[in-house]
Structure formats: structure tokens, C-alpha cells
Image 1: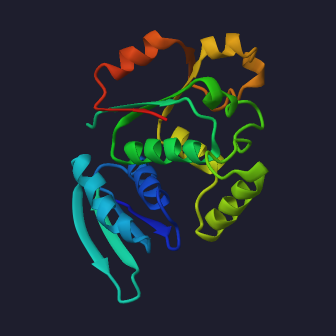
Image 2: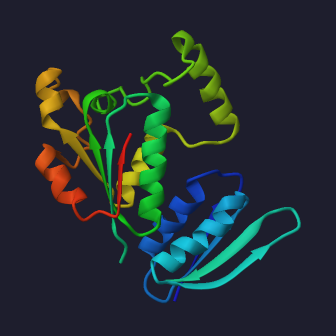
Length: 74
Length: 139
């Protein structure tokens, strides 16, 4: 099982969402995709997309500086 | 998985093309199948070199307004239309070109971005897709 990192710091709508989707499409079943970003709405919306696609949201963490990290299992 | 979004891109205005592509990419990211139908002024943007040529829908002021908005967008790190189109294609989005518009406006296949267009079609194809799409928009 691979772990794929997606870095979207400073990116705005819809880039974090799109980059997450691209990584999930490339991932194999069981792989973990980790997305790091700063766009506030994407922190809420990436989990929405994960739910819509029936995938597993592992965790969502936010640092004091507003950087968030989302982990998804394909 | 997911459902379908069928979006008609009738306007060739720069800001509206952004709206269409952001919505299209957002729908793809949610796991939906997405179809963008380019017709009339929208189709002009699919001409070679035409993507960024659209005016701003309001306050264009002979290009001054557009220039100001583009500058603001760059500062906010908004992706270019070309990048959004490439993302749309990479995520499996469909781009359909209206063949009637091509006839009316004298647009030939070789004038258009063949790398972006999935197919050429008429109203029947749009309705066939839209009849069971959960999201339909006219932009």
C-alpha cells in the first residue's frame, strides 16, 4: 500500500479539490492519500467529496497557522 | 458512483467560462460525470488561441476591467483557464461542441482545439445526457 502526498499550500478553489481527485484516481484500492493545504473551504469540501465517493476519511487536522492535513483511504 | 452534471456554456465571457470550469471541475472532484456543451459565444472560446480572449461580462471597459480582474486573480493564485481545462480533461470530463453553431458562425473543425473537444453534437445529445442528470446549468 502506497502513501501519496498532495501539496496544495497557497492554492485556491477549486485546485485542492481537483488535485485530491486526481490523486485518488491514480491511487490503488487501499492506498492512502494525504492532502496538505491552506484554502479554508477545501478543508470542509474535501471530506464532502470523500463521502460522496464512498471512500474512507481517516483524519482531518489543522495547525494554528491555518494549514490543514487530510488523510483519505482509497 | 456519483451522478451527472450537464452544463451548457453559451456565454463566451471570461468570467462565465471560469464559472463553468470551476463548477465542472468541482463536480468531477465529487465523483460525478460531467458534460460541458459549448454553443454560440461559448464555442468561440474553443477556437485555437481563443480561450483567454473573452471579455468580462460586466465592467469590461474596453479590456481595462478584464485586465484588473486578471491581475487580482493572479494575486489570489487562481488557476488559468488552460490549467482548469487540462484538469477537467484529466479527471475525465467531456467537452462537446455544438455543430449547428459551427455552421452558423462558419467555424471549421480545424479552427477548434481538437485536444480539448471530446465530440461534436447537437441538441439530441445534450438532452440525452441532461434527461437523467441531477445538475443542469445554462451559463
